[in-house]
Image (cartoon, rainbow, N blue to C red; front, side):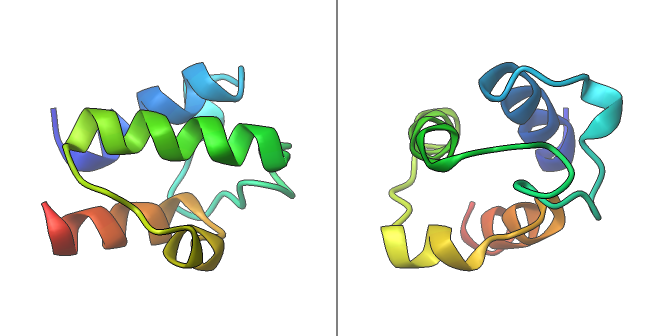
Length: 76
């Protein structure tokens, strides 16, 4: 499983949306309906799954699924 597939699964589970909705271009808030609580839960799930710490200021910059994947690929 590559990073995108893993992120796709985590996002689908965290914000209760279909895996097929989680595309690289999808906006977490606009397309997937994530709110601030979802963002916190998603951050914890990503940190746990990839074994890294994601500072809040970095998380705030990640608006799309693609930006999360890029961030993780650069650090994992």
